[in-house]
Amino acid sequence: MERLDWFVVMTKPGRQEEVAVRLKEASFNVFNPKLDQYSKKRSKYIIQPLFPMYLFVRLNIEKDFKMINYTRGILRILGIGRTPHPIDENIVSALMSRCGENELIKAKYDLEDIKEGDRVQIANGPLEGIEAVVSGVYGEKQRIEILLDLMKISIEKKNLKKI
Image (cartoon, rainbow, N blue to C red; front, side, top):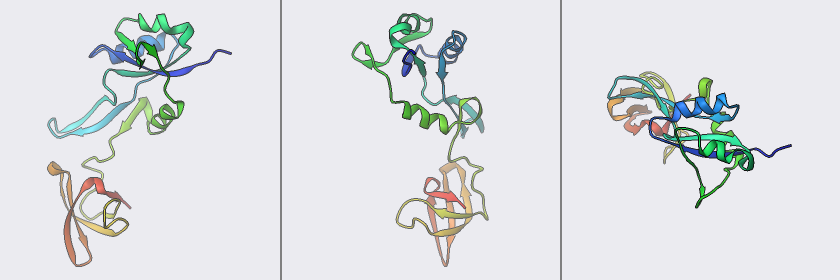
């Protein structure tokens, strides 16, 4: 049985999706994770590559090197010097486990995740583990105001988790 390893393939700018389709059509196992996040500039959700210009491809380097390297839109297979080097399967598995449908990872801190009146627990920092109620959401600054017993403080959204 042939040995298949995961490699990172660098594509030409703007050709990542096209290369992924081409490699899948050639029966390669391709992983092209994308991020779904809210864009403040566009005031809507946008989907973009998690790693622009890079794909994960599972292949037998001995057998498939030339075919991959000479596929239209591919610049090179990453490695040490000019020698392609596989990446740990656990890294790819960990990324895949975070993906939903269509290799999509939902951004962790969306504007709609936490709203006024929600009960939250502080996830990081000196107040970690303390529960509070959201009293204000300031999306443009990614900040949330919480009521903490008698004390009112402002804390970064990334340091909270909804409970």
